[in-house]
Length: 221
Picture 1 (cartoon, helix red, strand yellow):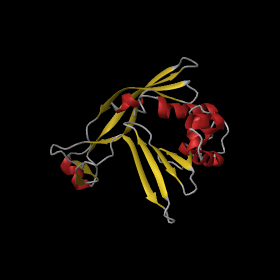
Picture 2 (tube, helix red, strand yellow):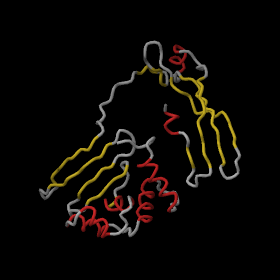
Picture 3 (cartoon, one colour):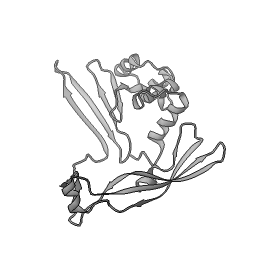
Picture 4 (cartoon, one colour):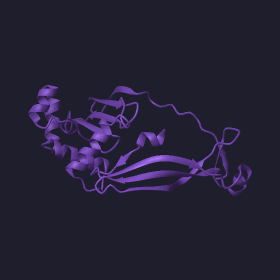
């Protein structure tokens, strides 16, 4: 199911496509008791057959790739990790939805936050600062003025944003902090937060944004 969710993978040009065909688990190198004695993990080699397609040339290559050692569950329902027996403990995770919160700053002013948690995909976290500027974090990265996200969604000009969201002091304060002036600049600004160190282009930034929020395999509210 995991491979099906992420397959196929394309590069930003769309010319190269990587497909996951099948996988296989080999035999573990050591048995359970021996793993405990040797302080190693009870695991089996995971190999995946992949297909690389070059749409530009029509060339197709298939190859089996070693993905790593996959931990195996023992007959007792435990795992042996570095020789130690472990169990999986259930973790309390927030249910998908929209969560609102407020807190007081040092001056006693109320600061409001909101989190949009999807069933699958990137989180969106909105927060006001003390100057009534609304910021957004995409998948817990560094924050941007929230209007950068709105602009990336196609509301390119300030007038379009004000018309869509309604005029307010908070919105105008946020627009003053927003250094982007069109959709491409907004997409690139988000790309820089998500892929720091990688040179952005309008095409790669748009593809990342669309994959992040408009691909049903990767984003589901």
